[in-house]
Each structure stands twice: as C-alpha cells, then as structure tokens.
Length: 45
Image (cartoon, rainbow, N blue to C red; front, side, top):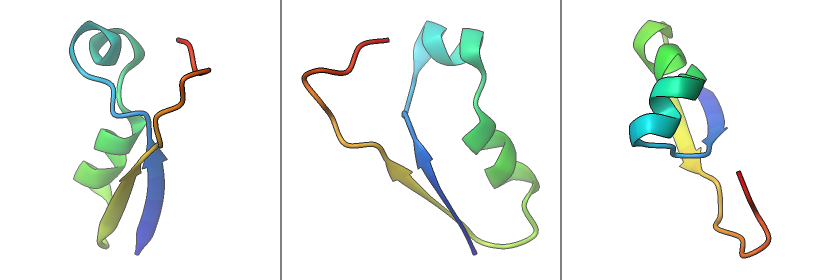
C-alpha cells in the first residue's frame, strides 16, 4: 500500500502544477491511500 499526503488542489492550480498523487493512483500496482493535508491559517500558495 502507498500512503501519500496531498494538497488537494483543484481547477487552474491543479492544471498548472499537475498532480503527482493522481499519477501515482492511476499507475500504482497496489492500493493507494491519499490523505488531504490539514488546513492551516498560515499556509499560502
């Protein structure tokens, strides 16, 4: 099993930055668990 943290980007941000997590989910030969990163009031992109 692969466990990954994800920023859970959507829309334009995902289109520009791509999604490593999505690529792993689609190509991994084993189960993949994605864990959404906790929200933080001090985080900025």
